Amino acid sequence: MIRIILFLAALAGLALGLSWLADRPGELVLTWQDTRIETSLLVAFAGVAAVTLVFLVLWSLLRFIFRLPSLVAVTTRARRRSKGYGALSRGMIAAAAGDTRYAARATREAEKLIGEDALTLLLRAQTAQLDGDRRLAEKTFARMVERPDTRLLGLRGMYGEASRRNDDTAAHLYATQAHRIAPLGWAGAALLDWHVRRGEWQSALDVVETNRTHKGITRAEADRQRAVLLTALARESADRDPETALRQAREAVKLAPTLVPAAVLAGTLLARQDDLRKAARLLEAAWRQATHPDLAAAYVHLRAGDAAHDRLERARHLAALAPRDVESALAVARAALEARAFDEARAALAPLLAEGETRPTRRLCLLMADLEETEHGAQSGPVREWLARAARAPQGAAWIADGVLSDRWEPASPVTGKLDSFRWAIPQERLSAPAETLVLTPAKPAPAEPAAPAEPAPAIAAPSPPAEPAPAPGPTPARTALKGSALYPMPILPDDPGPEGAEEAAGEPRPFA
Image 1 (cartoon, rainbow, N blue to C red):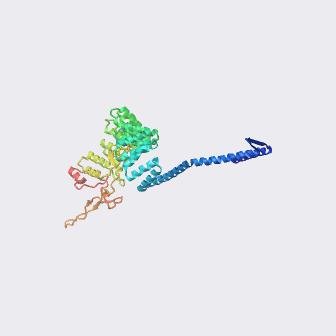
Image 2: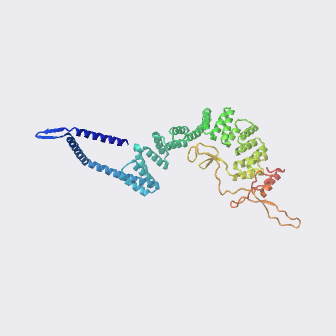
């Protein structure tokens, strides 16, 4: 709208000017040698305008003629560049689709049309990697490193090739160079793995701080990694520098309240300094976050030299914080066993062995074996039965990292060296493991004698094979026969005399459990 108004205003001004000149005619006389030209002022203006227009047209024509070669060259280069980028697009699509032959052909076409461009180098490297030509790929990435605009991309490619040939030193060198230019996520992760695999916890902690500062990782990831590294540092310096170790362990607990090893270490170091109140509060807070046997052991044995009954009282207090948890029952049972409070130990384990519950774990079976051995002796039948049960029981929760089970937590995986790989979890069981269910079947009656008929005697059958379905829960003959005589029915070994044989060998009868 504004442009229209301005155009109309200019047109009106031109019309007024021409009208003013028309109302005031004048004469213009031009004398040059013997030639005399007389005309009006308006005609003179028109003549000058016509001559100027002709001059401009001639100048433009001459300028176009002289610039024609350069215009042809520019047009040709633009056409070749357009075709080259079209070949680049087709080549990248082919490389992403895995069509190595078409990608190589498109690469050659793009290099012929464009030359050594950043994108042609990238396409050449991708095609070489797809084709398995590691030598050409490394050569292309090395050329990228020489160019300022593709240096980071070249360093990452060289790092990947070095990692493929298991050259950790070269891979670390490339990652370090890239991290100095720009702390990218892949470079920071590579440096972190390098230091973690070598146990250089302080250097790894510095890398984590750099990654967090430059937003390479989130704050939550940085806090977790710092907590794990601080725990590793504290564990190494716990004996030679307990003050520094305690400070590092407490900082790790603040960063990751669910990191059990940090809480255990901090509580243990506080207890060594006779600060039992703070140690107890710290372990209790960690127990509320995640119940764990290591926390229970550290809390129960918080003070060295305590009597067994004092440790039992501490286990009861800890179990009251999580009354329905399995670890609470196990902690109370273990402390009661050490205090020789056998009835309380059995009462704590009874819910875990009740009918309809899951199969008892190996740790639970071994604890029952310890209970039977402590109360009745190592030669009793129940001890052997629980040990046999433990050999076939599921593993239960354990520290697991990359398929490796460990008795203790470690900062990194023993397989890959990755930081914070251990998790407290239940390992997978074999799908073909036979179900351990005790079944009682009546034996065939013995042949009758004339003096007295024989009565059918019950016999214990072997566990049912995996193909047969497990018996439905309920009052089966096995559970009815053993009700009141065992906490959990167990198979009898072929050479085991059983509870009755053990009682006869001991010379005095006693209950099964």
